[in-house]
Length: 147
Length: 147
Image 1 (spheres, rainbow over the protein chains, first blue to last red):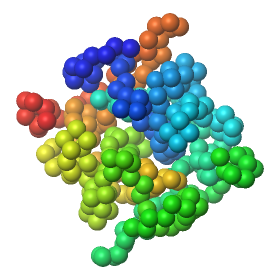
Image 2 (image 1 turned 45 degrees about the horizontal axis):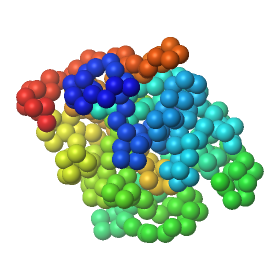
Image 3 (image 1 turned 60 degrees about the horizontal axis):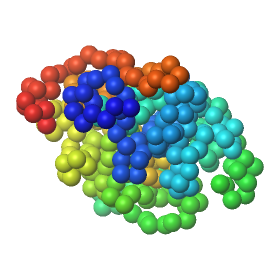
Image 4 (image 1 turned 90 degrees about the horizontal axis):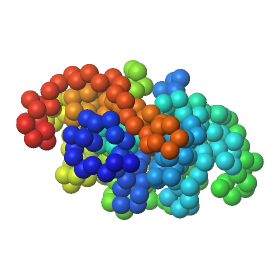
């Protein structure tokens, strides 16, 4: 990969030069290729990015487990990448995917299953469920610890 | 805001308790409410999140400028929030917005105006323009330095 720091080259060029943060990661947004729904936000390190591009299936890097992770490895809920896009400053990736089953470890199609509802003046915001249906039981798929 | 660290409460509860990272930020994905296109990925600190919820317009925190930032303050390209969603572990926010003009500082509708094209085996990936039309001239909007 090229390592140009010229903003014009990074923003207007055709060379793929991901800008990893201090932890070696870029942010990745996965959306459902057919509905446009945001399924999840996660991170990729250099290896996850390469494996995703080469295999056409989503790989991520788990910050909590400090490990490379093929999406669906445990759950079978893989993501086939239809298209990958890079943002202007090349520190974020958008993948449009065909999602098998559900993206969220809670068993829901998307991780974004709750809406934020503003409170009345002086009271805090709260959450409200949306699209809450589970497509699998996380305890069965990941074991009782849900991992 | 509540400060529970019980995963069940964070993932299954209705209390809004954003999980800020070490820099005090959550990741925010903004999509076009009508097309589902990902417009941009940015960050919000506590204040940006509160102002977005209260005003119904997107506020962000710029890591490069270390400053709170009302989207469209300079460019006029504001984002009206149609819905805000929170993800399972509450460290990422998805806003569906009505975008005035363009989201990207380069003048394009979306920051994700280039696709990643896999290289042949042994050669690096490259980028290819998509939806490249500019809706404004950044030099005119932000000045010649493009800031």
